[in-house]
Amino acid sequence: MATHETSPIEYLFIAQLAGLKQFTNLLSYVPHLCRLSIDHLHGYDHKKIQVFPKVFNKLTHVSLRLDYITLDEFEPIIRHFFHHLQVLRISTGDDLAYLNANRWQQIILSHMIHLHIFDFQHSYNFTVYHNQAFFSSLIKHFTSSFWIEREWYFANQYPSGDGLNCGIFYSIQSCRRTDYILSSQHDQIDDKNHTTNDFPLVRHVHIQNQSAIDNCSIYFSNADELTISDNEYIPCDSITTILNRIVLLEKLQKIIINCEHFSFDIVVKILCSTPNCSKLILHSLLLNEIDGVSLKDNSLFQVISNKNKMKDLTVKSMCTFEEVKLFVKLCPHVQHLSIKVSQDNFISTIKC
Image (cartoon, rainbow, N blue to C red; front, side):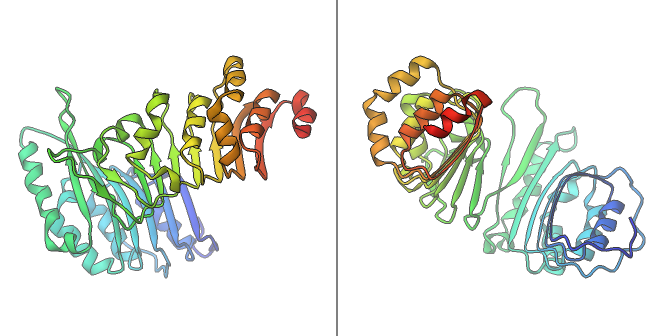
């Protein structure tokens, strides 16, 4: 990569990048970069970087998953490139130095003074010398006034299965964030009082699996967007009860369902409780011929059709002509319809 060339890119996502040397070369090539996300930054080239390029970068948001990179190797990167950083999301593993709260405190105070979101996750393994008690003694230092004053809170989790000698230390997502991902048991109740915490500033809640919503101890009172990416079975009769424990369904304005086996009768059930939803995106439609006929005559279907405010509807899977007609009847006020239809059904679909 020629160092005298530069790019005007401001936002950049990279799936994989090999080595910190490539990382530093990249930053010298994109001096206007504000936001950078790398899914896997590998530490294959364990050569110490002797000279860092002089880069007047504008990085404010960085998201990295580090593979085989120690904190000793990563800290110089922070010193040279992260002085304007406001948001750091980082996933690490193995190196115990990442669990040194005092070292992180010094790094942040010295080199990331503008940081207001520190989203941290570290995976580790138990050994003969480093057992659960050892890791607990390290992690307790993340509860000092430095972390509390910034509202940066953390939790620690050990797997319940026998023979699993590992753990994970992670940020409890800050109430200041507008997006929240429910992806595991991290957000479940683990106390006897079953206290529910409200995150009023979160606008978008993303549910990634069934276990994440069972006994969830967080409520998002002002969320207006919901994404469901769970392919596990969710009972139709209790779906609204389950979701109402997490969000106020009446406030939702946008719903995204990224599930391959999410039946249409569950969609109908959800829409019945979300009268203000104006945008719906479906990954696929699970509907058989019998369901289609019975749904159109269903009183619940009629109620939704009369009161919903759906203006924008997207179905990413291939739809039959009958399925399109069903959607049009369900959402008669739709202004923007994005669907996939076969060539044979194209003219009929336009007419409906």
